[in-house]
Length: 240
Image (cartoon, rainbow, N blue to C red; front, side, top):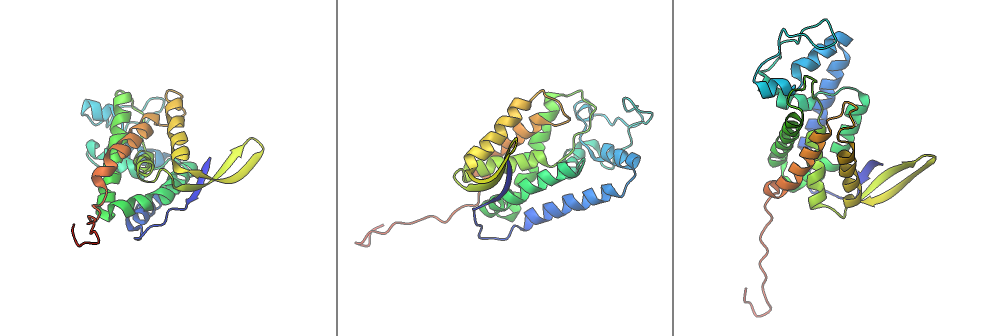
């Protein structure tokens, strides 16, 4: 199932969502300008590597398994790669799917939280997602990249706030292709179930990060939601 758009209007412009989209796409375009080796080095310089984060060490000069190269020195102190990794992607499908989900669901969460709250919510859920991945495989030397953990947080928040919103979705079942409108609770519930079922399935996907980000989004959304004006009831006799 591929979501195409939702029927959930907003009252404010998605300034932060658009900026996040722009930053991710700009960095990916920069990656395309690099050689294959240059891109690999760039990824190792900016990715979150569990071994570094759990052993409090930079793996600079240690050999990359299966290659003749050593780990390059990071652009940033390795703890900060927890954040830089959120803006790096490994291919067109990777960034395309992430940005599609961010565009469809991010604007409503930004509208509910306000621009500043949404920005910090995005970073915090992305951080939570990465930490869950690190804890799940603390000795891994495989670089973790992608915005999917933070976007999973956005999806978790959307599920809590707008479970009945209708999502225009492309459904592909073998030879059947159809566009249908699905309640967010079913679409996002199915998405989360797929992450859980794929744990341990490999494929180079950080399934635990998706799960961690989604649950963090569900847990934190009410704490970041913009305060709503208090409603005061006035009865016909003038008493409150």
